[in-house]
Image (cartoon, rainbow, N blue to C red; front, side, top):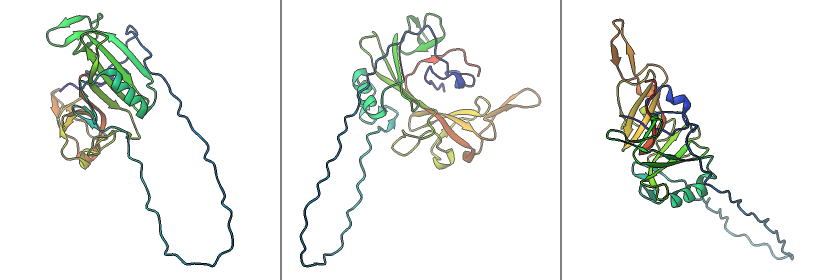
Length: 253
């Protein structure tokens, strides 16, 4: 399994093949605009009162109301309400309204066709499924990936989510960054990995997992690599990904 995470991941690049830092030769586009939300002060009106006979009414308590969340659920085929294949402008507008202005928006061309990898950058460092890609990221660690045959016709093809201590996004069942394997025994976790970093799947979503104690693999006294599974209570979700995303070709693990 190859987990493909955003190109703005210098730390994880050192431990997983697909993870990489941003390349300075990628062309950037500042695609998002900021719209300030208008606010109005509420006007308080005090009604005149007159003395009247006292009446006792049955006590009533208004039921608390909870605003419906507009944050989309993460899904293996996109986001709830925005499946893969949706036009890039529509998805970016929606996410900007829900998550705020993006803090990174990068358009990249992958001019070299590769029979195994799909397409690669001119320096042969990054690969992607399409000859053109756009990655738009928000402050909460969510990145939307767009791809297509031309730079002017990009659609939603993937997403990545990482490094969000608040768990602001999740699957409908509640899986998010920091979720424990012990709390979600349906995780399909792979033995072996890169020291304490491993991988797995959950409902079609790829997971990068971090073990707090035992590694996912180690070298024995004879130099042989031994794969193993840490205890579920010690393993938490480090990153999540679905669909297609660009990936670095020369990671350390």
